[in-house]
Structure formats: structure tokens, C-alpha cells
Length: 104
Image 1 (cartoon, rainbow, N blue to C red):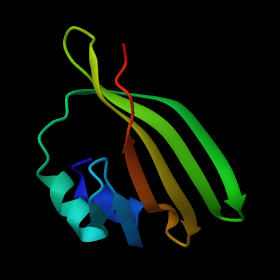
Image 2 (image 1 turned 90 degrees about the horizontal axis):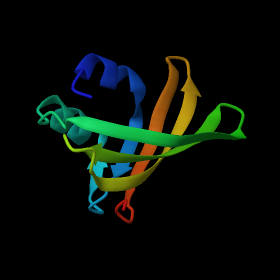
Image 3 (image 1 turned 180 degrees about the vertical axis):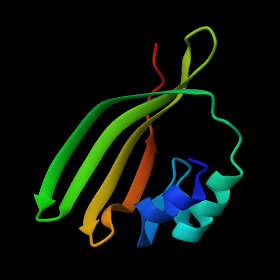
Image 4 (image 1 turned 30 degrees about the horizontal axis):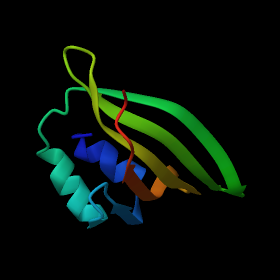
């Protein structure tokens, strides 16, 4: 997440994100924020699905949650990303995180 070289490769020039808070981010804002982000600790990511919507375009959906030292989950989020195949390879064009009901 903090590797700006890799983020530059993965994020499409027209990338935008709508975060869990509802805030809209530009590509440059995401790269800048992730470069200085505090280590999120253990993150559980699961329930990945990929659907091709047209040639060279796919939607990835999954869920994530932070996990504390006792195994308790928090900040559960449903996530979706629109990926586009480009001459540089597959790149994320759009990403959205939506707050989900906390796990029991």
C-alpha cells in the first residue's frame, strides 16, 4: 500500500475512489495518503469475486476487516474496484469502500 512505484503502476491516470467515509479521492491524493499511512495491522480480506463486464474491463468485489490481537474484527468494509486492461497492464480505474455491519 505504501509502495508509490507500485501504486503508480496499478492506478489508472483517471483513477478515483470513494472511501468508506463517502469522501472522493483523486489518484494523487491516494498515492500521497498511502505513502504516509500508519500500518493498518492485520487486515482480513475475503469473498473475492471477479466479473468481466466487457473486453478488457472487470469488476472485483471483496470484503475486508481489521483484526486485533484477540481476533476481533472491526471496520468491516465491502469493496469494489473497476479494473481496465491497458498497454501498461491491468489498472484500477475506480474503487469504492462501503461500511458494512460489524462482525459478531
